[in-house]
Length: 137
Image (tube, helix red, strand yellow):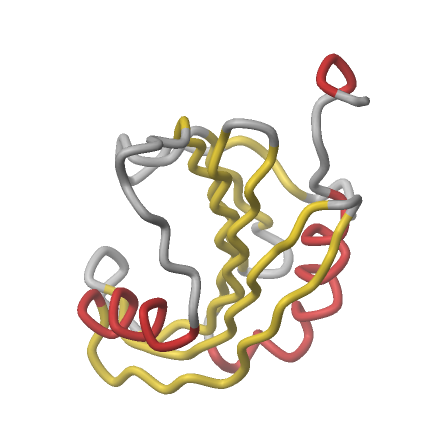
């Protein structure tokens, strides 16, 4: 990850962490939730599309894939759409990790014109998320 990322004021209390890269005109958020055994997590493509599409206008799904990162199964979803918070079209890369007893949602975004240039940085960040040292086997 480049050193251009800095903590910023979160636009919503749902984010545990929020950072911006002013140089690349990009942002990222991390939301962490304890897993609830009474709720069934649906990580399939259609369920993710429906959840995201409900929050955006001008939604266009670009890519969905499953990866294994540091032993964790991760769903990765890329899409474009007009966000209700930013009120502008954005390109998104979203990853959902199930790490130990937590659901970790990493969301990275930039304006569509900047997305291709930021995509490699987003993939690098995506690959860097792992279980904290204190929870390693």
